Length: 121
Image 1 (cartoon, rainbow, N blue to C red):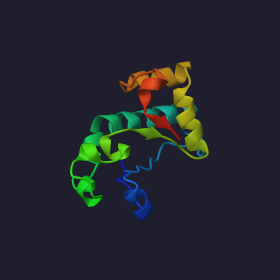
Image 2 (cartoon, rainbow, N blue to C red; image 1 turned 135 degrees about the vertical axis):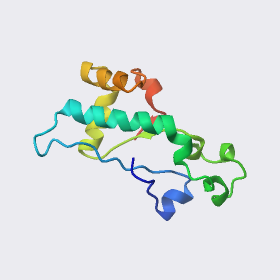
Image 3 (cartoon, helix red, strand yellow; image 1 turned 60 degrees about the vertical axis):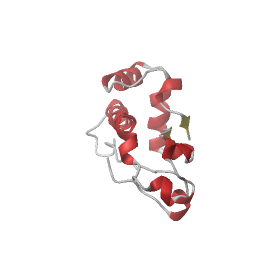
Image 4 (tube, helix red, strand yellow; image 1 turned 90 degrees about the vertical axis):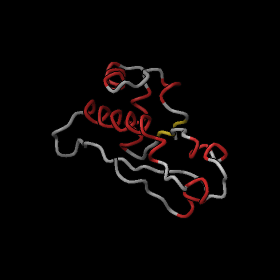
């Protein structure tokens, strides 16, 4: 995973933003299933390591005494979103189709969209 990205507005809102790079169709070497698998692998890693991805001083830097007192993003909630083809892949992972179910299951993720993440943007 890339290091967390932030802007003053993102940090002030208490969000940790991870921008994912995934395999693309552009050069013809990947299929859409490959793209979903790549994003599912990243989502599995985020869910597994989300507490360690949050900088240790994030809650204090935002004026909160404890991490549990901080906004939802710092409390470990996962929001899935994307733009353009990224949004297409994110949405496709939430559909109960064979390719998405296989990609999610391969990485130990729940195949029920209501258990996959806290919100889709």
